[in-house]
Length: 102
Ligand SMILES: [Zn+2]
Image (cartoon, rainbow, N blue to C red; front, top):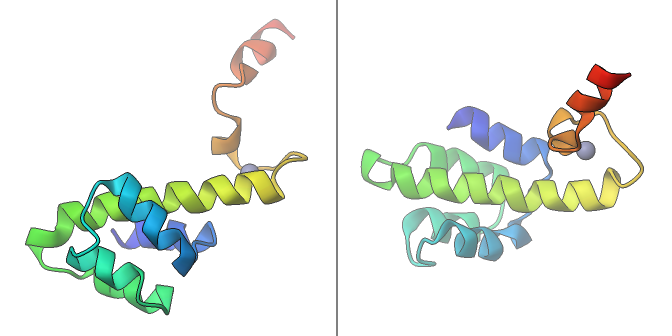
């Protein structure tokens, strides 16, 4: 969970990504992780979210995965349009086959 929260920060997740992440995670806006993520000071809230009790863990995990997806999509569209070194932005492009036939 700590790694996952770190990836969210690295992908420049924003407080504004909260509502879309909640929607994608399929959790209710009233669930504790959802309430925390929209409260501001994202880094602090992420620390709280990863330390939630066992009963909130699955919801917290789903939310952070969704948040990472939302933030990474934006980063990809905004900063990676002209190419980048993020290996996961080049999955499924057939790079493997190109190398094999080169
Ligand atoms: Zn990239």
